[in-house]
Amino acid sequence: MSKESQFDNSITDIIKSVWVFNVTNKGLPGGIFENLNLAEKLIAKNKLTGTLTKYPVNQGTLD
Image 1 (cartoon, rainbow, N blue to C red):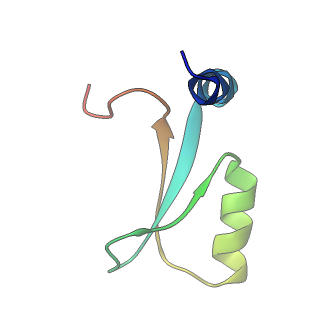
Image 2 (cartoon, helix red, strand yellow):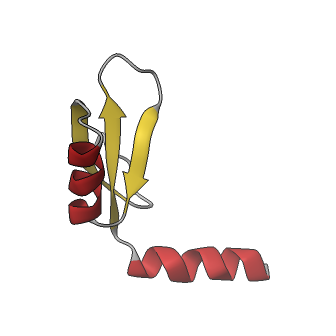
């Protein structure tokens, strides 16, 4: 296993999920966050509208 792969695995062992903010009517996420409070602050500060969804790391979301 490469050093980069080992590093990636150690991070995802700590980070079990992320919050993805999708801006209304945009094709790409407006931000990806480890912390819900940070996501909510950015959304409120910039008066954004969209969907904030929690996704697991290293797992499919359709299971």
